[in-house]
Structure formats: C-alpha cells, structure tokens
Amino acid sequence: MIRLGAGAGFAGDRIDPAVELARDGELDYLVFECLGERTVAAGQLRRLADPDDGYDPLLEARMRAVLPVIEPGRTRIITNAGAAHPVAAGRRVAAVARALGRPTRVAVVTGDDALEAVRRLDPVVWETGEPLSRCPDELVSANAYLGAEGIRQALTDEPDVVVTGRVADPALYLGPLQHEYGWAADDWPRLAAGTVVGHLLECAGQLTGGYFADPGTKPVPGLAGLGFPFADVRPDGTATLGKLDGSGGRLDVRTATEQLLYEVDRPEAYLTPDVVADFSGVSFQQAGPDRVEVAGASGTARPDELKVTLGFRGGWLGEGQISYAGPRALARAELAAEIVRERLADVHGIAPEAIGVELIGAGAAFRGLAPTTEPLEVRLRVTARTTDAAQARTVGWEVESLYTNGPAGGGGARTGVQQTLVVRSCLVPRDLVSPTVTLMEER
Amino acid sequence: MSDLTANDLTVDDLADVRAGDKGDTLILAVLPRDAEAYVFLERALTPEVVAHHFAVTEPVVRTDLPHLPALVFRVPSVLAGGVTGYSGLDGHGKTLGYHLLMLRLERTL
Image: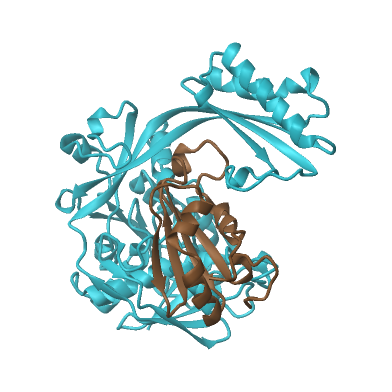
C-alpha cells in the first residue's frame, strides 16, 4: 500500500493543511500541484526579467513549512512548482534545506520546454485554427504536458524532493505509483487507475468538501480547518481516499463524485500524456467516516501527440470599480457606465469593443443570461484592453473621476492596471519532447 | 435530498452542479441527489434545454452516467475567451454552475 497526500491544489493554496498531512499523515509521498495554464507563462515573463526566477513564488514558503516536519527517507515530496524554471526552483529547494540544516537530495525534471520545437514545427493553434507563425502576438513560452515518466525516472535516485515544470497534473501522482509498483508504460488499466487517483487528489481540498460546500444543500463542517486528502493505493490501482481524523471538511461518495467529474469534458476518454482514461465505470463506496473506496477505472493507449500550452505577451488590462447603493442604484451604475464608455472612446481613443462593463451584484457573473432585479447595491466594474500601460490607466482614472463628476452617491472607487498574457494550445509529436532528470545534493 | 414536490421546481431542488472549464467550453457536471431525481432529470434536462438556458447555438453534448448517478454537459463557446481572453471577473465561468441550478423545470413531461 502506498499513501499519496495532496499538499496543494493550486499555486495559491493554503500551506497549513500540507504541514498537518506531512506531520501526521504517515505519507509516502506529498504532492504539491501548483501550476495553472497561465502560471508557466507568467513564470517565463519573470524569468526573462530575472534569469534566476521563473518558478512558483510560494515554493520557498511551502518547503520551509514542510521540510522540517517530514520524516527523511520516509516521505518524498513531488511538485510542479518549478514552473518556467525547474532548475532554479531545485536550487532554491536545496538552499532552503541547507538553511534548515537538513540533508536533502533534489531531483529536477526538465524537458517540457517546447519553444524550439513549436518554432520549428509551426503547428496549428487550436484557438485560431491557423499556424503558429500567423499569430501576431509575441510568443514567450511553450510548455508540453509531460507524463509521469520523468518523475518515475527521478524517483529511482531516491530523492527527497522532485521538482518539475509542466507535467499533466495527475502524472504527479501516477509517477510515484509507477515507480513503486513497476507498472509498465503500456499497462493501460493500471495507468488509468492511477490517473483517476491523481485526478481526484490534484485539487486537494476540492475532494474533502471544500469547493463542494453549500450551506443550504451541502453543509460541510470545519471549513476553516479543511483537511487535505490522501489516498492509500493498492498495487492493482484501486484506492481508499481519506483525510486526517479531526481535520475539517467532509469526504464521502458525494464529494468524490463531484470531484471525479470536475473539468472532465468526456468522462469516457480523459486524455493524458500517459493514458486515455475511462472514468465512466468508476464507482465509489463509503468505507467508513471520511473514507471512500474508488475502483472501476479503465484505459486505452496514450495519445501520440502531447498538448502544448503557448504563452503570448498580451496587451494591458486597465480597470476601475465604484459602488452605488439604495434607490436607483442600478440606474445610477448604468449611467456611470455610459459616461465612462463615452469618455474612454472620445477622450482617450479606446475602441468601444475593447471596453467591458460589469454590474456586480446585478447578475454580472451570469453574463446577461439571467434577468436583472433591483439590488440593494451595485458595484460597477469597467475594464479595457489596450496596447500600452498609459492608456490602460485611463480606465481607472475615468472611474475615479466619477467621484466629483457624478452620478450621485458613487463610493469606494478602486483602480488597477496589469499586463496580460494570452494562453493558447497546440499539439506536438511526443517524440520531440522527453524528460531529463538532474540531481542536486545538499549535505 | 431531492424535492420533486417543490413549487417552481428548479434543478437546485434535485441536484448539485459542479462547473469546470476547458478553453471556451463550459463543463457542467449535474449530480442528482437520488435515483428518482436522476430519472426525472434524464428526461427533463435535455441538451436542447441546457443550450437554451445558456443561449448557445452550437450543440450541447450530454454524457449519461447512471451508476454515479450524473449527467455531464459540454456547453461550447459560452466562456468568451475563457480565463485569459475574457475581461470580466469570472473567466473560468465557475459561478455558472449556479445558473444551471436556477433552471426551472416542467413537471409534466
């Protein structure tokens, strides 16, 4: 039996639940999933500005928190927090270990950087339907979704920490299972079973009732102390999901079923670099308090091509927000929006189609799909996409200037400007991308 | 639990919904709270009904998973550029699962 723990479900996730799992979970592996689609491209922008940066900003804090409490040689850490610069991330982990006085062997998995390959191949970009070379935006990153192979290889050197860049999220969990159980690279049923386990764990607290919770229909106790999940995985790939006794949250068939289907567009064919997993036969059974059995995965041969995330430097996004409350709140917010629209176009030369308006509190989240009712208060948010920062700043400026220029009762204005990234996707033949493992020792 | 007797029956009375995104496509996992609710929603919550509710013209695809039980809907082109292309706040469309919960259901089918 191998116990895999979820230490993070996204780049900004909480740290204390991982510390609790690391200390009390009797884990074989603690996995930190820290990469979103945009995160690698954002890391690449940081790396262009500083050649020693480009990895996850919270990596150091996470390692400082968990390295002192794990049992060396017992619990190994795996993370994709290397983002756009896994080697620099590995060096940082080694430096943290040194500062803590703990001998640590770090294995770094690289090879996901596909910038050269896509420049040479000029593949069709999914979103535009045209070759990459036709995209007018500046390409700053191209990262292929590697599978579990690099992690499996890295683990043969018995490292304390494995740091990767872009790998498929479930592969962070499949890698150690392949390593421990010797599952062959074409053992599709077991690779699919391991992928299901990885998919269930990869969003951490989403499995233990966090994102599930709704005080009306789905009450969950102890959410402020939400425990992160672990899985006891057997050699055949079936598993028992669990969380620490006394931790907050809830783990049952309902929370597991919701998570199984999260972001899965085709349950019968979940594409990963390692296997095409079939979730349609997966079933859950309550095995005790906060314990759920998972079985029934099947799978077929992995795809011949790997998905690549392309990061382009976008323009700038300027925004401004202001609140209106009480009688005619919605009408005043709508009038304010019209004034800002007109001035952004006429005074600052921003194209009308680049301007976005949201009436927060009056159904903005539903994008006009639901009828608006008069709310007690409305928060107007105006955005505009521009090519330069100065023009982006005019959006917040115009919203703020509603203070004196009206309409009545606008309050709490806030402004912001940020550089944007555009993320697109393409495929590359898998033989063009392969993982490389580098060891770093800290004694 | 599901309440098939509620006045103004909505999806919220019978099921939970988890929203996810893949690019421009919104993925909605509908999780009926019991077998009776599944049978009802299997008939009532057709791809056409969901497409109309989200004002999309491209076909919505539904996958039936009776043993879980669950219905998974793929709603194309609803996220207007998704997490990096949409300038509104919720580019993922995470809140849109609760829009499906507000869908009113006809009791007589």
